[in-house]
Length: 306
Figure (cartoon, one colour):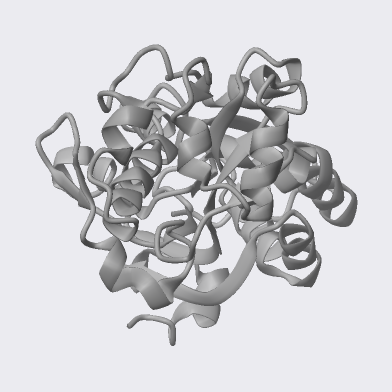
């Protein structure tokens, strides 16, 4: 990675998980531009979609923010031209059931949110329109499946997953990530699987799931691992806490700008915006080749390898 002279007129391109759209586009990016003088350009999509696009050289972002560290596997190693050599985990979130204020089942959802009615019984009612993302394109789609597996174990009711989801790829429930919130707000869906930060960000009502199944509490990581999903490549994905992470690919247009964006995101202003948006800041965790980290960041991460 070369070292550019500082040039605040250059644009920093950021590819990021679609669950962060409002946070990044309307809050963090404008603050970043004002604070640094850099221009910002963003692309949001499912983390797997973005990783595929980077791998296939359809996009070349300066920074990649993912909702799953597994997405980097598509970019690592000689077979993938070593497009990514390191990643840095910085925040966590949990899965919730968001529901529509326009749903005909609104009172039942309110009752489930208050804990007076089991949430899974509401979702099992005939006519409930449930939305989730495609597990082949978005980690959240996989997390939804894992949550329902864990629910079956936690409540000792083996039929919960099947009666609510049908098949893992039930096309009547699968929608693009960018559309799910709008469908709920418009009443075209009754409920959906979301990250906590997403529903807080757009002020949607939601049902908090027990820590044992919401994939948001590292204390329960051993229980999470009892759930698994087999992806299209035949690889088994075990349940684990949901973590947001970032990397700077090995070939970028604006390496200095990429470093500035990462420093801003992880600095006091960025962390405050992340927390206000419902994300939980966690101790930074570094994985990969420290020698591939830009020099301006290396000192900050060299003691994080576990």
